[in-house]
Length: 454
Ligand code: SAJ
Image (tube, rainbow, N blue to C red; front, side, top):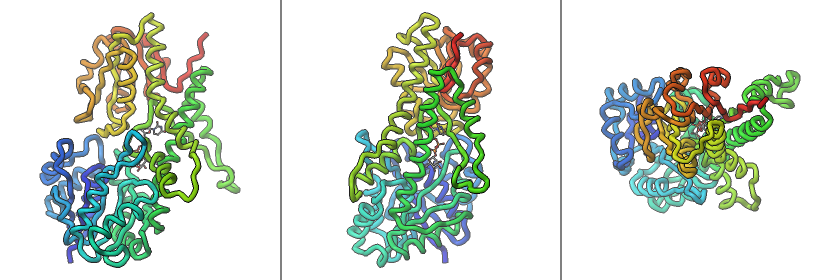
């Protein structure tokens, strides 16, 4: 018997998971994507067997072409297709609004429609990252009301989050352990059985709330570690020390072989021009929202909130470094053309969600500069940008490296200097060697790269 799966939301998570299930024996998969102005084009691309995700994604293009060719995967724009599906995976965006509260419009709308059309015994899995308590207190009541059935009886419901990273979507989805949290035991059991067809690593059962907390804690843990690295970077700049050297030396501390847990190895993260993406900038707020909304007692999670503050400050600090370097040439930011290299939030991908480059752009604009964004991979973005590197660099008064795309690492610093009106290079990602830059006649500043003045 062919098992039909529906995946709602053809994004960085929905596309690879749909294609993986479509490639598993005995499955057929329908992807659902709204025909929106920004993403509707993906429907036709995918149905032509083409991969809409830019950048290097090993194995994804071949996989999509294969499952479309063998007709086990197609995409529609109508959620009601879930009426005869055995399982529905929900992979819609769950951003936070300016008030740092989650926006569940898509999640609620999709849950409503899935509830209306799903049949008896359907398993619904929320894969989108949500605030703790959302599966039990938001999704379940909507599904029960619109279906007239009870979770754990008429249908099953679980939260099973992804651990993907751009550049290794398939690898992480198949190769990393997955936490599977049902709203009750049978739901967990059925979700584990389902994922066993695509995940080759361990599937760890738990309850929905614990799984939700784990997801946002996992990302907030990384955010906190990055904030610590960024604070160390600011300290090192002030002391005239190289934070990347410090990081390297800190990470040499081995753990205690007799009892590794007592003294775990240090894995200091990288300081940089800011923290972007669909996950880290919001997951701490989702954790706080869960606490504020469903918590038994209240308190203010200082570390999590301060972490956001420190990481959101880094693009402002980059603008400070540009101003400081220009001053060496008796210039200010007023009217200065500043080339910002990289729009994507991470190297070698086209994902621009919450990119620090946008904050650098607006901060420089606020200070009177004329910033020009450049990116070799990104297709579209809310702010004007160019894919022509020469256009971005020509007669610029400063260059900021915001995203460490491999194209930029090949830049010849002498040639770069020759194109600039003012030879200022601000390195937001430790991409260049400061003495090479200085030798090339560039006034160099780097996040975390303290230069001891004679
Ligand atoms: N960054 C730093 N310093 C670092 C690491 C990252 O400044 O040491 C910056 C990056 O430049 C980027 C941002 O942080 O702007 C996020 O980078 P990331 O490498 O965390 O990329 P994401 O957000 O795509 O991936 C994270 C991962 N979470 C963890 O490792 C805990 C990934 O495993 C998750 O699946 C993903 O979030 C997600 O989808 O939740």
